[in-house]
Length: 168
Ligand code: PNS
Image (cartoon, rainbow, N blue to C red; front, top):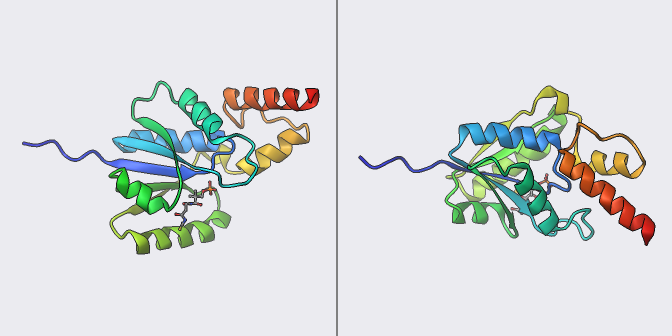
């Protein structure tokens, strides 16, 4: 008997930077799917805080012990990338009702473009529901505490960036 086709999920996003909310979703996805590919949208913003390669390196470092977590960058249409990877699922995190409208629209557009791809929404632990990459950047830049909200490697890299900026 042939073995079933592995169920591959894509978890797309900007991840600028990776937060503990993202980590929580990736861990949950890795328990459910045979493989989860964290897909970083390349060059979303003209001036991202972390370059595409830095974001890949950070996420690979955090998940180095997880055999079924892969990290890649993608550009162009998400559904095209997902089909190219033989994925059947798109994973998105839902923190609050406020996320829903945008996520619902994207899920339906992606379904329109690729009816065979299913979007699965996952909720992070409630202790992470108020965390977003945008707020992390803002709070850190203004000198606020972000320990426990992002993986330690992200905090280290943020501090290193701040130091080089001060020197310049
Ligand atoms: O972390 P983000 O910024 O909320 O992620 C948004 C992302 C990367 C999932 C979305 O912008 C995306 O899929 N971009 C790729 C281009 C695309 O396929 N656009 C149509 C989406 S319906």
